[in-house]
Length: 573
Image (cartoon, rainbow, N blue to C red; front, side, top):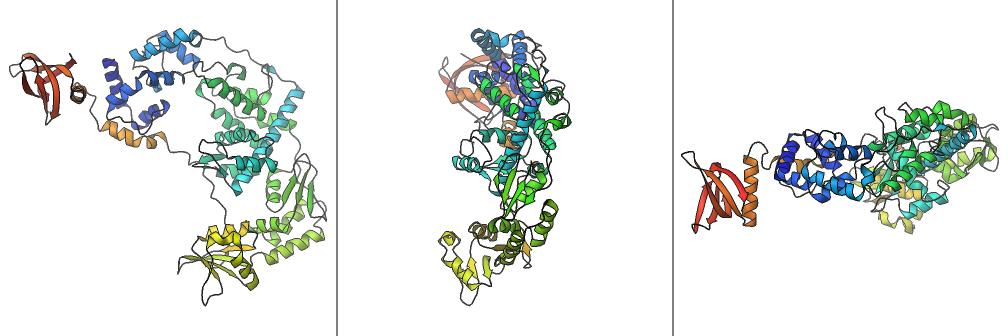
């Protein structure tokens, strides 16, 4: 155990910061681990419980190699610091592997290669493509809702019950349990990211919303493959047939559930069907090639680029509307139904919301004229004009002189209504003497969105007094994931490198002496005398400082003080 700990400590110390951080992360080490040097780290990683946790992260191939003996294990076992430089398991690791092999011998037995699935028939392929199309629409609805109001996460991670209910009632998802699968797909493709207690949409997610369905699918499919655990991936960059997934991590009790979830997510996106068959687009992806949306495209419903605008202020899309057009139409209208044919309704509030995001009466007329097969009905044209004339009656700006926010309007009755509106009480709006505007200590953007949510015709002004389009929440960028491992473990790594050195005997000797003093243990100390000879002393270690060891010599019944530099070795009694 001692030699293994020293060997591992030396190997950890030789790693660069980035590689060391990856090893600590792979072993699930807490960044707040109470380790003082690499010897502490080595003993912690060679603890039986820590080794058992690490073994659950090895796939069957790695377990078989680790059990086979010296020189067989590398790859994941090496990254997890389970083997030495020659690929031999450290003694504590070998002991835990032997114990695991006794309990679960099948985990250390190779399994036959899974048979290659047969090509799926046309009917199965069409059904899979239909599932992918429906799932892409659901994810688009979720991301669009998340753009307007980020989804709240509970302390355990899942989306809050209130947001699940909101999305279910809006028709974005059929069942509330579908939401986590959709968000997992989005996260793997870099379209959304969990940030603190919220899910936010990334820049890539906003671009995805405007992409055609085949491109949407390709992005998700490649993200799904990239996010698969290493045990499922092949050297060619592909992945194993999903019929072989269940037994890949045989020591991980949670793996069967996780594997089933991954298979379920893949099935949602049209990647998997019956275990015995495979779709052409899945075969290409599984072999390591880029996602081939062209093979799926013929099975997808044809998208349209025109709608019928009607005098009852609705728009009827007789088929699936192209995503970019659907996205813009929904910025100025409320979608009432979603199917092969969708219905959208225009209201003063929906048009006002579009203007809040930067639309104008002219831009809306131009868009709708190009989209409509029936022109713009007079009731809709009138609603656009009346909404535009009213929009912006309330103006919100930051007052740099006072650091407060001003709420202005030429309509005194509207200002009076805002003053007495109980929903706006949190803003603390005040009527300042000699001023015809309201004032608040709350930041401009927060005041703006509170007024907008309360259905007031509000517009934000910039420092020069010009209208400014603002967004409720800045989207997270795809290049800003959680802190890298090196940053997460920076403090711990600094502590380890500042502890005892691992070169030669000096670092190990100091550590042994410190532990003996801390435990008041009896030790045998071998000291090199001035004439070059060596002499042993049996001491009860009492103190260490100033380069000297103090201890009670029981045999001579005296206290001795020995120079640490003269100590050759230390061992327990």
